[in-house]
Image (tube, rainbow, N blue to C red):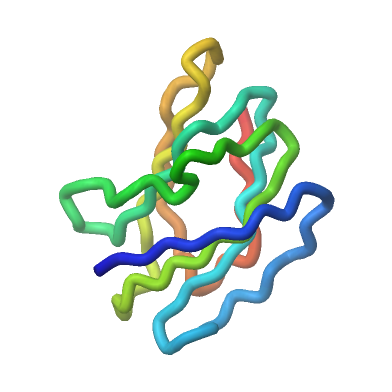
Length: 111
């Protein structure tokens, strides 16, 4: 079972140290550096053919806000694909990127 947890950090978020809170947990801070509301954020290990569940759930990430993301899926991988979706009134398209989450302390999505 995959488990995604996050705790909102709605001010200036310091760089979260990446480490293993549990044996396989990946932790980083995601910042919305756009002028649009982020409505969904998905991650999946590279080479997985489908996006996994939305990390934000029912919450959204407003412009300038940050959130601490913990991926506790029990996998022993570092490279993850990420997909960002924005409010339908936004001019921003869905954006994807690939990052080594074992080395990532903070990630800012920009326009």
